[in-house]
Length: 173
Image 1 (tube, rainbow, N blue to C red):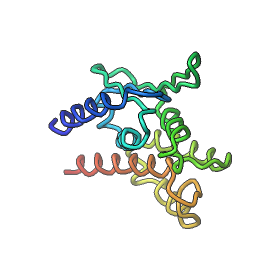
Image 2: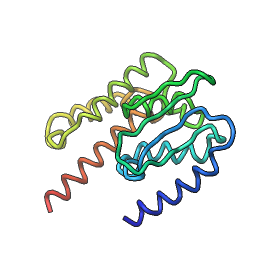
Image 3: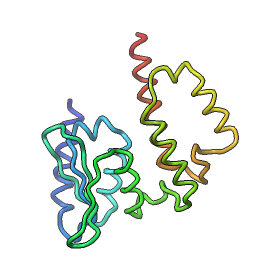
Image 4: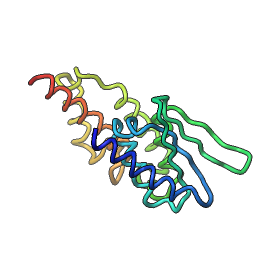
């Protein structure tokens, strides 16, 4: 509770500073959504610190799905509501996050694949063949999308597995 209240206050103060100047993207989300999605929270924190006022965060009180608006010009914008699409769009739009998305089309498709897989993981992967398959995959490459450095897919998979592991650990107490 305290952390959520602190985050709300911090993000509100940061948002007030970030609304001047040209805006490339606006993310609308509740503080609860940001605290429950560590990857989204990490990207937002990075953008609020490094995007030179091109990124705006709008905090909402309701728990409606988060949304991202990308402004292409004065008269043209794109609205995204699907989590993975929002994360990939943020990484593809802002220089501070570009290293998380490789420009190579084959690598991008692997990032999409692993992010989709991460979003569909359930408790049974912790005891099933998934982890041994992941281990075998990673024995041939350093990162899941076969990139030179960690990508958005690696972070998404990490946070998904960490959440499942934590939930499983708490259930077994």
